[in-house]
Image (tube, rainbow, N blue to C red):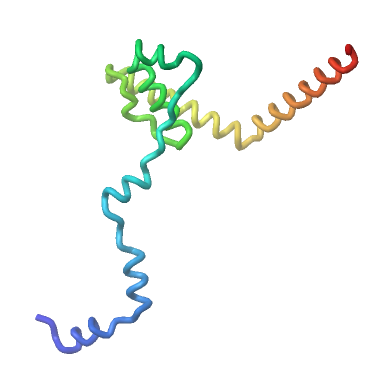
Length: 131
């Protein structure tokens, strides 16, 4: 049973409390799923459709791995039919992603890119001298 004072509190609520309450309301399951759902990556290269027609499951696995890799996924449910192989692949991909993150943090990729740019410049310099 609601007392008169409780009823008055509920009817004269503060607008700021309503805003906070509205912000803290969890989104429905389909909306939350849309936010976490990643846009799938489609692997395409010359004659990929021909190969895809021959081995569609391999492309499905590769596209799932690429999507998880790009979007920081957890590499679960890759579509590998053997359960042990799926677990091993998942763990290996997680480890590889961790190694990539560590290399990015240390700046190894930026140093390698800089070295590549220097090499390109030297090749262009040699080409210009030869001509």
